[in-house]
Length: 329
Image (cartoon, rainbow, N blue to C red; front, side, top):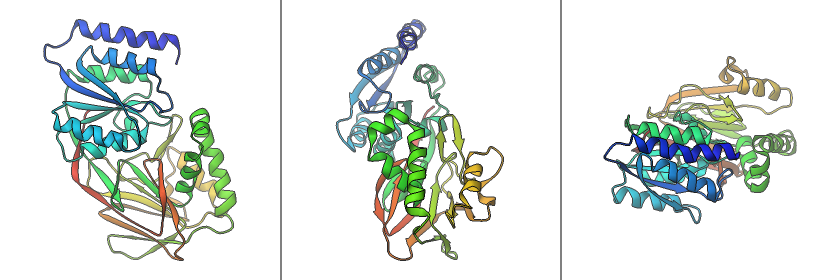
């Protein structure tokens, strides 16, 4: 990060401390020290700046699911807000610990994509995001959202089976390349997975929404919010009709990954106007309560949630989480 940006963080805390309200909210900042853009110096400067408006404690995560334990403890100890400072995986873990409590979650961008932070309206630049959190201390309006779940694993905004999840699995296997090349490495892995597996022998899936007729396909995307993800600054829209607050799901079923089909699919994913659901090889759904995806031939298929590969499955059962999650942004 440029030295000028780091200096800006130092100045932020002093600026807001001069006009600080008498009563400060207790804030726990949960930091993933291995996230793409996080460093010790940045962590310390962010904490210093936030102290201009909050009573701040900060703790680093040590292992997978540690953020869930920390946020669960924070809710029990009466913190007013928990900040997840890392990528979408860190935010997912933090949300799992806070669901069902009154302690709200917010985010600081520390990953390569930071989808959920952007969905909440938090800037993707760390200096701007820190200033944003300082300002909301004077306009405190927590709101209720809902998570979704698949096979009892909860997620915040998106999940996929098939080609999308195969790409995520391949990217996650090389975290140093993911950190160095970001979305371009995703694109590289996407072409590799498509040409290596999905041209010759794609998986055969069937998707049932709310007990309806099965929809055949080779890849399924399920959303709890929109957009599905980002490519740098470009939002990638798959399904329409998914919101963070509504207790329903939306998604798309891609029927084919033939080479003649994929250019049109990619165009619609990146287009601000053309909708993916209107492609002749896509079935869309929205406003549904339950989605069940099965492997027709019994072949295990990769599954991801919020951009994290979580294994191969032969069936994925989706629903909206029954417990609320509070966010503030």
